[in-house]
Length: 292
Image: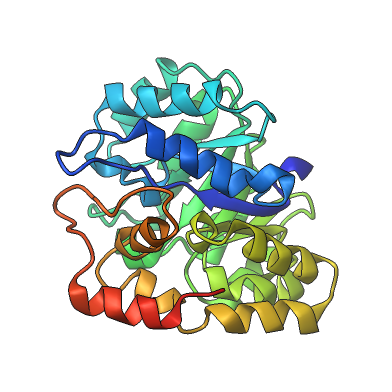
C-alpha cells in the first residue's frame, strides 16, 4: 500500500446554506487538494471531517460517485465506513460498490464505549466482510474510548487489517504499536502537527490531515520532508501551522477549516447541525493566523 505513503486529506463535504451538498464546491476542493500533482497523495472520502454522521446513505453514495467521476488523475481513494452499530456497518459494506476504493478507514465505535474485547470483535467482523483492506482509526477525543496499543497489536495480525490512523496524541502508545507490529503494518498520523514526530519515532508513513484541505501543497511538503529525514525543513513548515491548528477544533471540526476554504474561495462556510459556522470571534482568530 505504498500509495498511502505521504499526505492523505480528510475531505470536507461542502454545503449550501440550505444544507444541500455543494457539488461545485466539492469539485473545487478536489482540484485544490490535487494541485496539479503537487498536493496530497490520496483522498479520504466520508471520514469524520466530511461530517459523515449527518449525511444520508444516498448522499454518501452521491459524494463518493462524484469523487470517482472527477478523478481524472486516479488519485487513490480511501472511504470512511465506521460507527457504533456493527451490524449496520456490515450491511453497508455488503451493499457497497468498492470500485476504485483502495481501502476503508473505520473509526472505533463511539458513545457505546465498548471494552477492548468489544473493539476487537467489532473490527474483526468488519475486516472479515470487507473486500478491501481496513485501516483502524483511533481518536479518543471523539469516540470517548481509546484503542490500546495491545488491541491494535492484536488486530494487526488480521490479514485484512493493514494499518491504523492514530490520533490519540500518545507518542509512547504509538511507538509501542510500531515496535510490536509487522513492519508492513501502516502507522498513519491522525494529528496534523504530530506527523513529523510519528514519522521519526514510530515509523509513521504519513498523515490523514484536516489542514491539508486548505494547505495541500505546503502540508505535503512537510510530510515528504519528514519521510526524507529532513527534520529541519519539516519542523520549519510545522511551525507555520502551530497557531492555526488548534483553531480548527475550537468550535468543532470542520468548522475552522471550512472558514479557511471560504477565504480561499474553494467552498463556503456552511456545516450541518449540530455544528454551526465559525463565530465572528473564531474568524478573527483564524484571519490573524492564516498561513501564506
